[in-house]
Length: 110
Image (cartoon, rainbow, N blue to C red):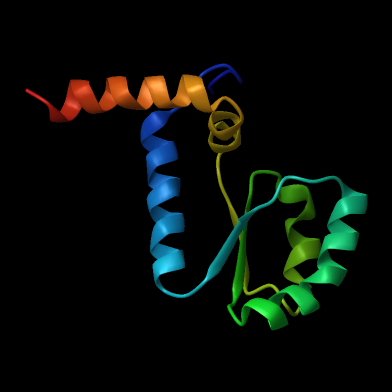
């Protein structure tokens, strides 16, 4: 298990490619990391949001405790789980980009 300061760049790139592929297929993709109160409010707003975007919505979240609740919302197409390091990487973007560049240099440039 990684500590919160470490970022698995390969896993993060995997999630970013997954998100890109879903968007290219016509889905709206949102990262979701909220408390229970925000989750309840958010699920009520999804009808208006999906009617406006006209795209099926997929949520990506790291905390499975609210996944079952969000899966009950008829306006959310799917709720997917990811590793917490993905969210950590996004909140520490500078460190993530540095780690990503290093990984690319190590693996793809002779």
